[in-house]
Length: 252
Length: 322
Image 1 (cartoon, rainbow over the protein chains, first blue to last red):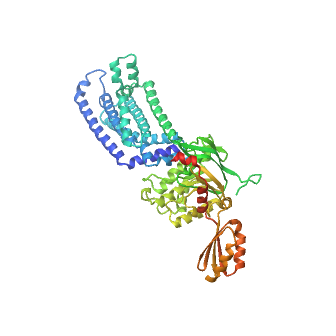
Image 2: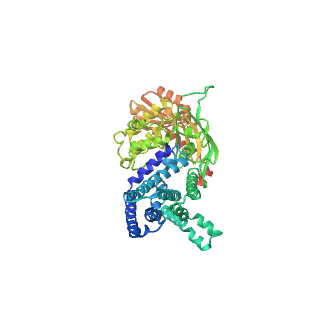
Image 3: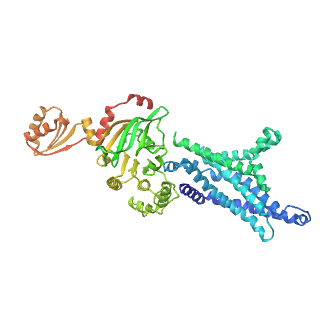
């Protein structure tokens, strides 16, 4: 009940800010453009694809690249949405209102997290509607579509957890946004160093930490519990760090 | 006021040897205090005396470095404290709300966090005189309105205890009077109220007991009358004479009375008199004659506070803060 109240207020505050509406509008505009470009490419090669046995369908050619692009754009956008979660409350002294209420720090953090995740799920649902429009003239691979949506959803959940944690570290939303972006970008490209180091040893470990690798497996329709566990553990770790950070504030 | 089996007042808040240090500054220094169920208790002290720190420690928002605080027998920050916390209403100093929420939305949000009956929010706003502004965003509220909203949120869930840190800040005189009338009603319902205020004239008639604090130390605890007797400050007499000429025999009579300092001003005489000489002075005034009226004024809470603060000078703390 308390968690839901905090989440509902957070979601409402987001929709009352022009930033959230701008993010929704820009994201849909960019992805509508990418979606139409992918369809155009697909239409250009469709006549040749029908001649190849086991050729990729519309889901592989249009939907998976669309979700892949969405993940990169959201890596830039999510920090803008999460930057105010705690830092703004600290800045405007409304955080003490929450801290003095009879709710646990875990409830505060999870409530705020669920609020931002609810917004991101709305965004994900809107992005998911675009591929569904292909049902009008084609056949979709629903398994691949579901795996892509799951991957994007898990990725957004992980982005939000990092953004929330960074927001607990500073009273400046801009600093929270920049540092979240830095951490996410690093975790996105960490396997580049892994490629240089080679497959074994540190290279393999770095590749494991790369978000991109786990996400791309899901985009290909490979449902591996190790990838799911990676995102879940990643998210939980940053949520726990956020709770510990705020606990340290409450009881110095 | 509720009493225990042995006729003693029941302690609802027990503060035992509590200390809190911020860096080199002792915000609270070995504070011990018992607050009785159903009383109005006030913490008094200058800025930085440790009142707000003590409030925060009572709520578990700050951890004491030493000592223990128990509320309804449960240790603050203990496992069972959360249930007790729901029975405490808290109004922080300089309360801040979410600007985009209206008054009623603010109460509903905070009520949900407290597990309170959300249907009571409208009635609470009515009680604090904000019903007409209930649907306006808080960003348009004046300081006084925000303070009233803060008081309303402290009352969410019909708390058994109220901790009010500077509750009358920003209220106009009528608002202050209404506030204290409401506190008395709450007291009649058995609510325990702990408040801090700088306005000593306002609270001296409203509170059952007070604790005087200075630089983290609790100097003394008791009712205003207890404090008067402890400190033994002089009483102030105002004597009104029938004629100015009646002043001369009175001057002679008072010269023989120790502990009295008269000041003559036409037909009025102001006399500062030791408490133990009160009856002797009254007898002198009656015997001398020419007296039309006498007003006797006890030392105010402000006099007592200043008397204590001047009398006690904890040099160690002052050094630490300087």
